Every structure is written in structure tokens, then in C-alpha cells.
Amino acid sequence: MRYVLPLVASLAMIMSASAGISHAEDCAAAGTVGSGGSASADGTSASTLGTAGACVTDDGSTASIGSAASAASIDGKAKSRTKIQENDNQLKAQSKAQALDQGTFSKSQTKTRANGDELESRTRTMSHVPGQKPVKSTSENSVILPVE
Image (tube, rainbow, N blue to C red; front, side, top):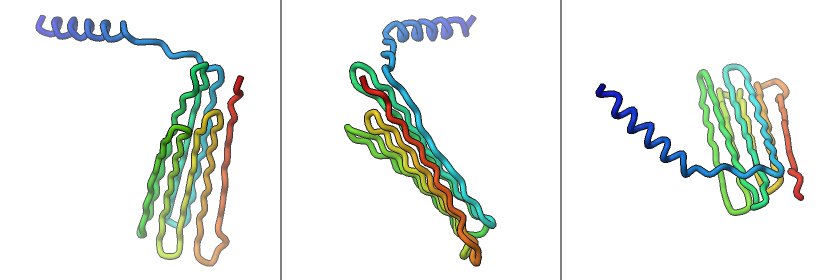
């Protein structure tokens, strides 16, 4: 019996809170974009990714952005970072990861941007073992939302 009262009170609070919820406006155009990549060589590894989404409505547009980075090294150094910048016109994210073990290294970088009706994401990776040719890769995606 002592659990019934808190349960009833919790349900009453949830019901009263949901009564004031307004529903989201439908998007006239919506889209998502993303890219990511990993590089590894002899005990080093680096990965980054980024994603963005936008919804264009009659009242304007909304956007979201996310990005992440990770790096690891068995015997060396590893570092990663992510920065997200916001202003009235756009959202920008940049993630970098790098792992270094003597002359062997792996690195990855992703830049993602949501600017009004345009979404972009680009990832560049590279790994290198001394005495061998570096391995490089680039992945790029972009979306332009239709505007009425």
C-alpha cells in the first residue's frame, strides 16, 4: 500500500506535464548527412565521425550536429578532441584523433557543417609506418535541402 501513493502521484505529474506539450511542426524538407573513418597501423588506431541533420519548416529551419573522436596506441601517445561551434547561421563540428608510436602513426579528422539548407561532412584518414608508403582515405557527403 505504501507504494501506491507515490505511483499515483507520479502518474498525475506525468499526465499534467504532458497536457502542455505542443507537437512539432512537419518539415517541408529534411535531411541528414554524415561521414566517418578509421586508420590503423602497427599498434596505433584513430577514428572520427560526424553527423548533422536539418528540418526546414514554414517558420525557418532547425538543425542538429554531433561528432566524436577516439585514438589508441599500445606503447605510444594518443590524443583526440572534438570542437562544436554555433552561431545564428550555422553549426560546425570538428573532431581530430591521432595515435603515435615512435615513427608509426594513425590520424583521422572529420569536419561537419549544417548551414541553413546545406549539410556537409568530410572525413580524412591517414596511417604511416616508417619505410612504407602512407595510406590515405577521404570520405565526403553533402546534401542540399530543397527550398520552396
